[in-house]
Image (tube, one colour):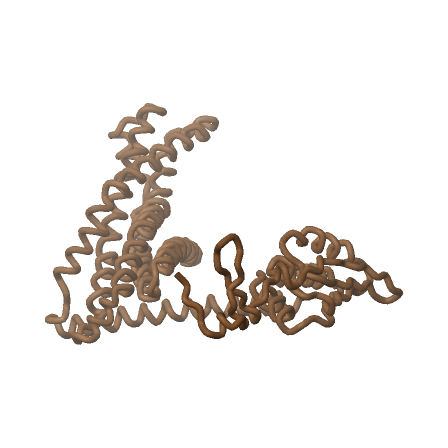
Length: 410
């Protein structure tokens, strides 16, 4: 039961109103927008010489959104548009969105749409909706000028140079920590080195050998098809030997290792950085470069030449088998032609590249891992970037080696 106050019993503002036996109270200071502002929405379009004026009045709700939006769209033409909000008594979010969206469309088309009048609540709601709307792309509003394009090119070049300088800094860090470990053998982490040699070397042997074997098969098959036209099938041995020993063996091995190992280095170091394990190592007085970078890069430095030799052997075996099947060149004849017609310099040229490729892959992977942020998205981005950068750097280095060896006559 509701207990009435003396003021209510006296018929004051809180006096109950009888309605079918239930007591209801009237609170005069609370307004109802559906009953206190009954004026419906009204839109007047006034075409003047210099401007198209839309005069809005009444209460605009969701039901009036379609009409308001169509009138705003139709009014946007060659002349400036002026929206008069003086007569608006109430505006909901949908109507505010229609007005703010019309402003964006007019701005994108290079036209003018201005708002006049309106009470502070109406203008505040429109401003709030305007800030929440997604901004159009700068390229959609205005075409980029030549100066903007040159600025973008300059920023890209400076970013690439800064990234290259960072890689060189990490290379110097690796060499400095390696030299200190050699001067102080107690700091050298032999267990970590053996572990990483197993991870980057032994576990990569199957995929490297299979890839090189198939490359040898393809080279022999394609070479025999072409050389048969000139009756020079025996030279397929020279083609296979030079291609694999000089270029394809070590290059494809480095690409596989870059995709397999650079991503692993980045993921491992990046995960430790996300979990703040690297900060904990510094707190304990452990140098992260000595503990994380040196064993990984050194393991690659030791194992990539071995993987290159395995790839060379597998490629030659694949080429010999296909030559036997396709051309009838026996393994003994293949071996004899390989020894007699192939200079040892081709093997040396290929093997000289291996340590350089190893250092590039290792430094790129470790540098990307140390740059990982504190979220999983950053880890994924840096892992992908490390693989792409490592493969690209290996190919660029191989091209530079080819030019250098051609100039010195090797």
